[in-house]
Image (cartoon, rainbow, N blue to C red; front, side, top):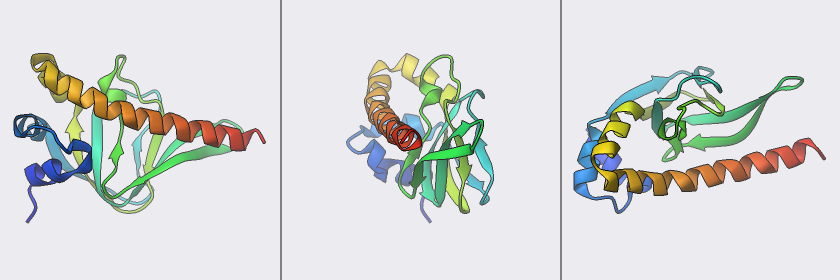
Length: 150
């Protein structure tokens, strides 16, 4: 049986992170499950969680008022979902919806922000890692918008 600690420690997102920081992160972790079609997050709602997707696929979407949701990225096994918990005002910028039965490790953003305030090195490590995810998400959004306006 795989433990939360082992999964977090072996996840590529946390590669090279110290054992001390892994322990702090695991203290904010829990298992979650979403059924296919279940909404995970909505743009404009409070953001206090991010996810390590263990199994399944999640659509990251923006909503076009005239044509409906536009998927800008699909995350799956081994990916990270969510970064808005890290930056005030802690509001989601995208919708996300499970495409399949999805199992993930949920990380409590409020818990992690408190730990980052107490350990700035942990905060810096997380910020560096999330900056890469944000850059990827922005690049995906840009490509989707280019396709939309062709």
